[in-house]
Length: 144
Image (cartoon, one colour):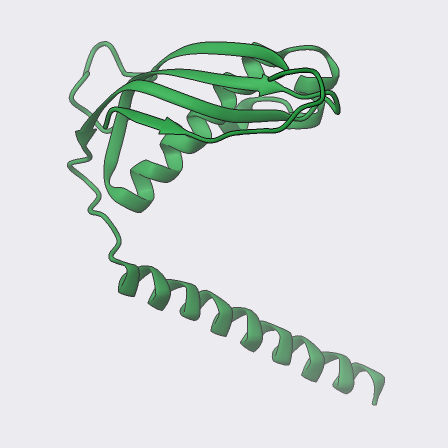
């Protein structure tokens, strides 16, 4: 993959840039093992990071989130990439550009086809509907 790009509109030019040279959190003792991107869950909330001015940490966390998603949805691991984020006048931070993206196949996961993803989404929705119906039945029994 060479480039990923989006655009934003800001009254004051492009906004304040945040540049990241992202490297995957490889286990140095076992670099061929599956990469665990889930460390993003240990970071403070997005709001706290932005409110405390930790823009670099926020952007790095977003790189981990994107990599985690791509690893699970597409079966690809991002090893490194150069990423640009911009903060607009409303203090929102936007992913705008990634280049020099190096990837490898995830040995333990395969990409979802769109049909598989649709089936999984339908299964999740059905489970939610069933849970909702069960909850309604329990409430009706409780009120009776």
